[in-house]
Amino acid sequence: VPRLVPWLATIIAIGIIAILYRLSSHVDHGDLFRVQIGIQELESIDIATNLDVLKLRQRNKVDYDTLAAANGRVEQLLSRLEPDFSHLGLNNALTPIRSAWETKVTQMERFKQFNSVLGNSHYHLINLTHQLAGFRASLVLNDLSRNLLIFLAQGDSDDIPLLSAQLSLLGQEVESWPGERRNAGRLLVSHGAIVLSHYLMVKRLADDILSTPFPSALEAANSAYSQEFARAGQVAERYRAAMTGFTLLLIATIFYGGVQLRRSSRDLVRSHRLLDNIADNLGEGIVAFDGAGRLTFVNRHGSDLLGRSAEELAGAAPGAVLFAGDTQGAPEALLKAMGAESPFIGEAWIVAGTGAAPSARAS
Image (cartoon, rainbow, N blue to C red; front, top):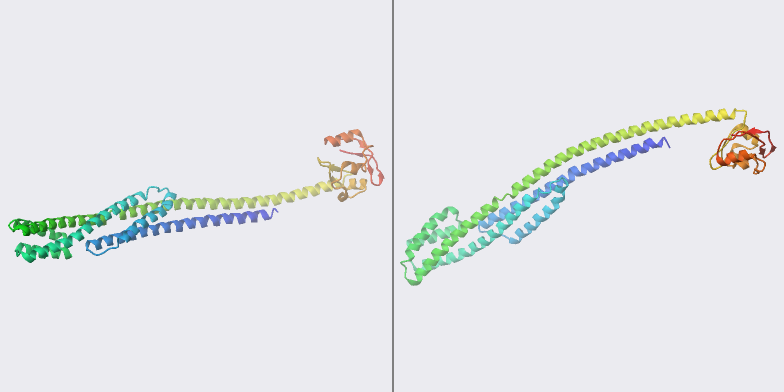
């Protein structure tokens, strides 16, 4: 057994080191990779949302269901990242991201509303322009109609001052138009002003959406996680080094203890052999019993006196050994000493299996 203890301890220590490095490897690569993938996916969703905004500004059709799906996906990703950030004590690192996205979603809802109104206003404005151009010849109206059509097709905010000025001139001119045509002219001027104001609102909302702090919040969270993860990795590295040193020290201590144990075991065996030799060479018989009254030792001379071998006497009771099972003739002092497990010195006849033996001193 002493030889097996160092090897068993070595196997256990190596297993501890392997588990420590396996767990540290999983933390270093698994958690960090998962967080980086989550941040990248959030960035992709933000880019896709901005592209949809640009498409709407260019009056292209956009599937609004994809915007709703993007909102749900962002919340799902943030919920998935929370345990990783909380594990490093960054409980509030995702709050700016969530706040920035909620702001962006609110702006997107307003943007969609104004953009929808602007789209419907385009058609009404074009119809009014064609209607007035059909029964009223006016240079101001003709210029305004042409510029409005160009603006509605591919206009830019730079065209608005010119259009506003033309609308103002047309507003002055329509006051001289007769009856029904004057009302139609007033409606065109009023509707044109509304379209221009809606266009400016849509443009401002689009610019706000494109400049939301969502990307910067993602970058800040990613940077905070990376820094904290690097710091935790350094602490874990020192911890692993300390555990490795402790394990190696444990192995050395166990090996040293095993060597000492084997040496002590050899010394004990030599001591027992020496004591056995001394006892066997004494001129008296020696018999020893334990606290339960079982024979534990008999020397060679004692075995000769009793006429039985040490193997036959092992575990026998005192009466069976010394008095052949009959204790009636034993001295009372000897019986009391045996019962109280106290020393006894005296003379008594020992009845062995072969008959009477000379008197012997028992202790």
